[in-house]
Amino acid sequence: MDYNYPQEAVENALIQKIEGMGNSAKQQKGLFNRDKGFIVFKNASVHDISEGTMDYIVKIERKSRKEKDETTVYLVINKDGANVISDMDAERMSRVKTFLSNLLPDVESANLELQIKAQETSVSKAEKKFKDLQDDQQSMEKKIRGLQDDLKTNAKNQENAQKEIDNQKQALELLRGKRSGSTGTK
Image (cartoon, rainbow, N blue to C red; front, top):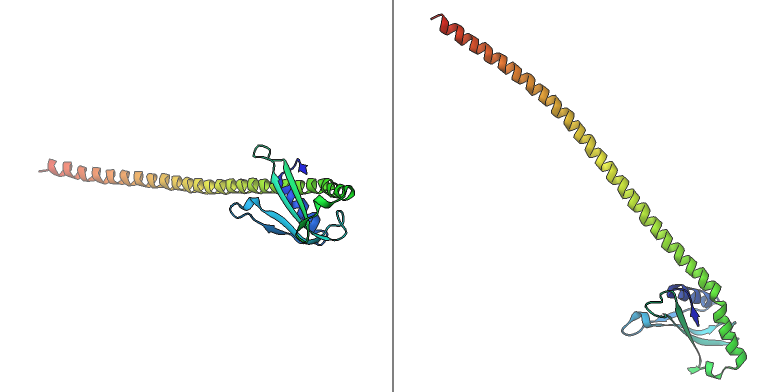
């Protein structure tokens, strides 16, 4: 069955649906590529398909690299190690197809949840960036206040230095005045 939704949404929906019926999934990863695994429901009871328990082996994969939002689901049903699908009558095959078709609302819901989580992540990142910018602004304003204080201190120090220069010049003139007054009297 093909779905026009991302692989993760289809996988989440299918697992939730079958686990919601009281079954548990076991993910079997591929030997060399972890994305090539199967989801196995051993002795699972899926009443939409069959009254008894069977092994449901599911493979969910993206259609292609270009078609990221298109997913294909492969379903193998085993009973005592034998493929049951080849022995199913038309009515039971129809139940399997109906089960997969009826999964669409669950896939849509799972896709919406993924979109919500992605949007929450985007909002969280934007809020963090905003907070970082606010922190930067506070840091810069603190530096500016420090620089303004430094400017005021510098201006006061210049004023004091100018007063000191004026005092030193007066003292120099006073000393020079004594020199010219003392050389003139000899």
